[in-house]
Length: 276
Image 1 (spheres, rainbow, N blue to C red):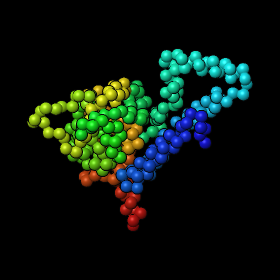
Image 2 (image 1 turned 90 degrees about the vertical axis):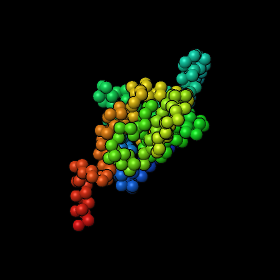
Image 3 (image 1 turned 180 degrees about the horizontal axis):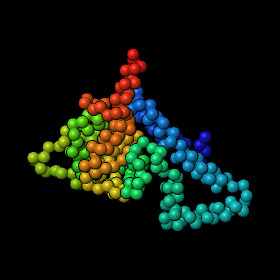
Image 4 (image 1 turned 180 degrees about the vertical axis):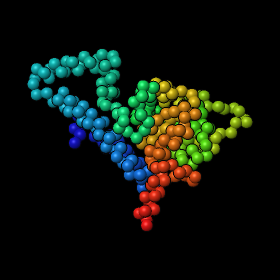
């Protein structure tokens, strides 16, 4: 049960449903084994527990029965709300636990190594306003589709892919996106053809690029985003092939033509034995 005191019950329910739905879809489509479903509990439980704990603390704060404590609480609250910085922190609800998965508990690249601690893996992608291909302001989510997304920072994320890499991402219903700073999308070059099958966007507010920079990723990086808009990982362009093989192995996806990894060969053997 989620107490109502910070108004997060429905948010938690939507996150639960989104987290589980894409995994069920992947399993039913045959692009992942049901082992993927085990990550639902390990991802969602810590955040929900943290929100419930905060809601109970808020209940204790707003429902004080002792009149003297209530007077002191009211005075402290008025002072805090009038204090720059603290007041904004409280009004915006920044004290509410943000959705971020603990290291080692989520489907994504690990943040345990020191060089990866700033990684956006396991964190929710921001939702800024961006300028889409039609020149209109749109929410980022409306341009990302419903499957996996590869976001190249200033580059087409497919640029260094092998055909096998492309086939793997196509099987995962992946959308390819290139993000530029506002006004930074190449224009005016008559010889330039916009890449077919990719979406080019401009970060109007700068929020997305600033967030990526804060996690150590700049021009030439590729961000791998899960269907629920949590980041699987972010890598340099040259590391994308290795990341592609990694995610395919972790999903235990059905092999693309010519791919015979040990995990997939074992699965095929089990299927053959069951059929027999």
